[in-house]
Image 1 (cartoon, rainbow, N blue to C red):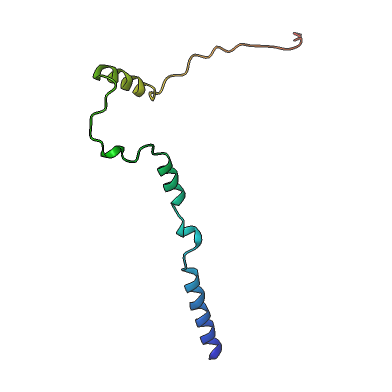
Image 2: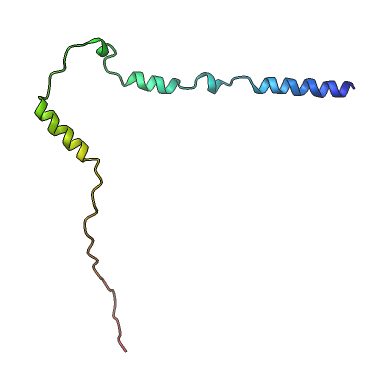
Amino acid sequence: MIKKYLVLISLAGMSLVSCATSRVEKDYGNSFQLVKSNQILNPEAGKNLDPVHGLDGHAALIVMEKYRKGFEIRSAPPMYPIGVTIGQTSTR
């Protein structure tokens, strides 16, 4: 009877230990957040609501059309096989 209780208590203890968080789970996502924050040049830029000056509408339209055309699937150029032989061929 005591062995049965010891087995149950040990199984309960092992199941509780397996639920504990590991060191990896505590730091999960920290490297992503650090890399993301290091890539931001000006963290206050989102608070500036002034319009951005740069390309006019027509130039921006041309740039966007070229950008979208870059993702279109193009057909492969025609292939022209070239036969090359090395050595002599005999015909009998």
